[in-house]
Length: 377
Image 1 (cartoon, rainbow, N blue to C red):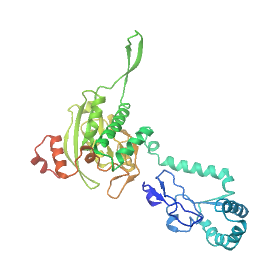
Image 2 (image 1 turned 90 degrees about the vertical axis):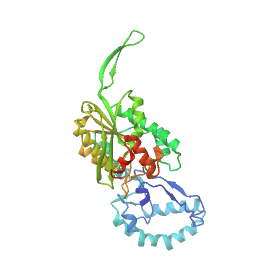
Image 3 (image 1 turned 60 degrees about the vertical axis):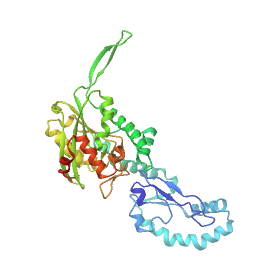
Image 4 (image 1 turned 120 degrees about the vertical axis):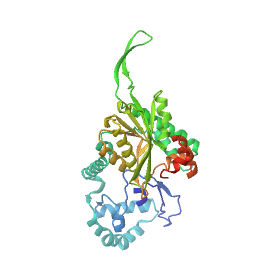
């Protein structure tokens, strides 16, 4: 349960009631989900399990119904005769229920009489769960957050780029596809003007004209992976650079920035594939605002976002727009996004050691290596 709540898949043994063993059948792989239902007659007995639950439901069914169901199940599924079933029920099952199961009823948040026939109670529970899920829907909390609609194609590409076994070539290929989708979606949030054109048939078509005054700004180094998609969508677009040195979670230091001189007159597409804690993004956005860019003119594009980073950015800059392809579960103790994609820049550019990273940065910034080494590493 703890692993599922942390977004990790688990393998659950399939119990064989005839042999009383777990290793008879292959285990079942269970993936994490928004709602996890844990079922069992002794499920409230262990306090460690109870503490993992957000809602505890006790289904209270009449004793005669329970006995009838048990007879049907044990005779059909387990191949037992009725005499054996009744003997076991009277000697073990009923006393065990009274001693160990019925007392756990006090731990329940909700008690449902008549079991599955109580449609009113079930509807109330379903509505409560939907309400809780809605409270965690960040798009409802922040109207300036946009998540592109998921499809099996998008889920498939996310599966590939998250897989540790994916080759660098495939990682780059499918990352580029996802980035292109995010960029296209982000461009749709720019202002447009109405425009009429004459078609080859001599007819008039009323459409829109693209926003011409825009530029991209990438947060080095991962953000540069999104530049090609932006250039492919916006011919001749100007792109600026921001390099922020991070120390742990809270320490940021602006090392380098090179932005268009007229950036204050442009709409800015801020590029960074991963939104984690949000601290680096806040630093970059503050720099853009100091350069005269209106907050409402900034669109932040990324592939995946942690809820913590979304809260930080949206609360700090309520007029900025964030466009992403998926909202993650959260951050681990090392402030890494989970389930995440790992170190995106290293996987995308193929740099796994410090020397390669230093060469890459010095090439991108067009400064001598010695000058870079004078800066914080």
